[in-house]
Image (cartoon, rainbow, N blue to C red; front, side):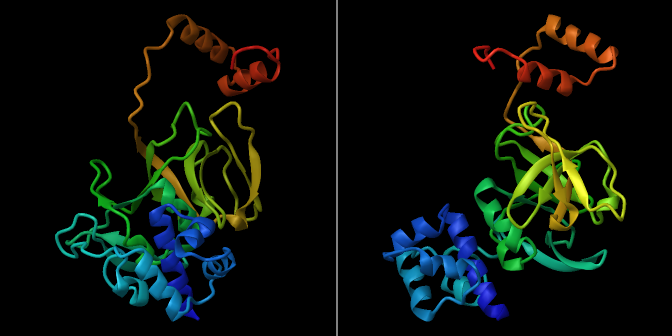
Length: 280
């Protein structure tokens, strides 16, 4: 069963690598419908003929990797000199055994999880084969400790963090250890999301409130048991350079904050009470 699940996970990782879902992959494979692919992605063991079909349709797919989980995902990738190759180790963190990436000296480094791969991350985040497909980086200021980088999808944290920015985060071992007010990458079985957590969690809390910096997005609660991983954002890389601030507007916000009002709450109130034809 474990081998079957591993093969299914490799197929899911390959489709994510190619930017395909069950429907689009089924079309490329010539299937009449996508039910077969859905079953594989849900954990059903792929048959030998299915594996052969994958290798015929995608000649750049490595047979060793697909069948055995050995080597790189694609043919022709170097296993030694390639900057994308990773060494992986299993370490104990709290009450869990997790997979971490290390360099040739055994020091942990940073793996970047791009947007297309995040659909599979929730299910395969702790599988060595899955993590091997990603590039690893040494980022100045983040040399010590375990870090993971996530490409940001969407505008829920704008204007603080924007779409396609890359956040660098450290693992939070226990929910009670999180720092209130910080931004976190929240991993559940369904998604990878970027949210701010304002309140400290206690061991008996069963729900956590998730906040967006975007005033158009309302906060909502999530059961703590649904959180698979939590990563605290320590920094981010952005290609967005903000324009010079409007001095008058910035001064107005300063006065509003000095009066004790929260900038986000004021902005949300203005948006909710604005005329329907007002510019957004």
